[in-house]
Image (tube, rainbow, N blue to C red; front, side, top):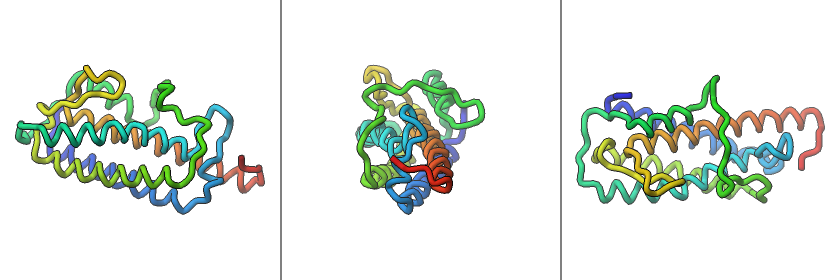
Length: 193
């Protein structure tokens, strides 16, 4: 995948703003709805968000550090790396979305969560917008970041942004489906956990 750098950043900013808006809207729901689980193996809305917070806690400082240390100026075009593009594509939500196994260390199933989980995510999305703005001044191709599962593996900064933001999209869509189930259960007078 090859694209204009500014177009990529603009797209990622728009996706992040949408994610931020969704999180703000989730705050309007009662915690019982946000903790509703269709079954024991499924995640609640807040568990979906907590999962994203695990990754934000790793990637946001990593991205910020790499941007601040980068000596490579911005380029007109971004060309995705082979591995980075693969990870980004499998994270994209869609009809043919591939179900993925979650690492035990990032699986929030069974956690006791409240709206502070949403506040953390909202803070992270605001930080992501700030970092996307700063990324306009550095190379998305030559600036590299480590990945959370193996720090010796490096991705292009542009790919890292794509992976993290697409991953956020993916789980926010999951959270919306869970919320719809919670609202149906509430309408059917099923007791919340």
